[in-house]
Length: 113
Length: 111
Image 1 (cartoon, each protein chain N blue to C red):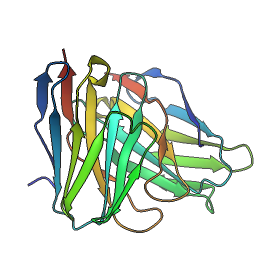
Image 2: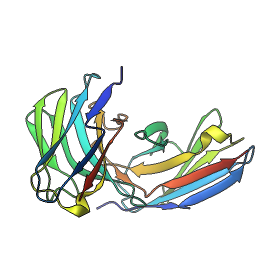
Image 3: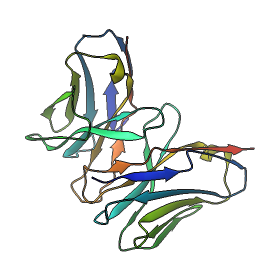
């Protein structure tokens, strides 16, 4: 079984709809992250959480919110989706060391019409 | 904040040739430089990393070099194979959770 799972894998929604992307991990890591990937733009950090009670904004948090329901679960919400949020979204986890490897999920392809 | 530039954006090589991807970073306090490989339909996966106290690291056909003075680091793949075809990302960070990624290089290895 995959260590980091994301649901759904694909989602098409309409402008103005609320949508939630979910991430679960079985690696026992405290740290979890949400990234957005656009063609030719690499990965940009949306939010990250160092433990259940610690949530931090990344470089592109506007229009997004997150919830850390448990050590193993980290959800990303778009309260009112807009077309320029169409992208590939990745969840990642890591241990607590300064140089610990980040382990990525398979991604969620989101299309906002 | 940190800025990471990656070149080239696309790279095509013949099977068996070497491939080199270069990245530069702006924040001299960055001390950790991972490289990720992303295959089609999958998330990025770490292939090699280097810390700022090391100038070079090698793992079989893959090597990474770091020049702290010039603030650049490179990925070298020797004896390329078709299965090396993927998108490669460099990243720089000074502490976990704040990695800044390059824009990616699409490597194509022609049989």
